[in-house]
Image (cartoon, rainbow, N blue to C red; front, side):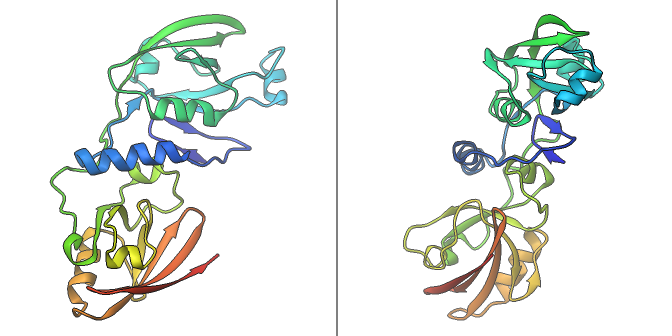
Length: 249
């Protein structure tokens, strides 16, 4: 199953990566406001295969299939139903799940979005007023730990942020900024990396991360394991100094 902030994609043949521009969009929002504000449509979608299209008596398999609609969601209020086929979103064609996923992911809450659908095989146009995703974002008052000492800023990785980045893990802390010339940069750490271990100790949340850094002696080196895309990367991070790195694929 592939998931994002506004749409849940389910079914066969689903697997996509968040584009670089979208990742930058998320990181910039985390840095500027402390949370990611995203539009919410409230539908579950899947690829419309030729076999499914035939089963629905559709002549073609263009668009993506709505497999469920969240009660009370913007999609529900606009009249989108299970079995509808989404052809266009905000004037742009929807050819596959990732198209709709990415379009909805950068849409602003409160925006009125036009959509073209097939409902019972017949064309249907409607307008959806997006709302903010429920329980969206990271609290702005969370501290960015070890920023001065290590030259990096982090946020706790919530399930929502994991969905934003299409991450396979929902534990750890995500790096939102790396200072030029800092120990973190010397270690090869990057914004978007997810710290999942420090000195072979699992990091599930911000408290564990803070404790691990606090327990490290100034001038010592800690072994940091990060999740970067589909790979894991080990970095030797010196507390207040330089670093060495190696990668595990």
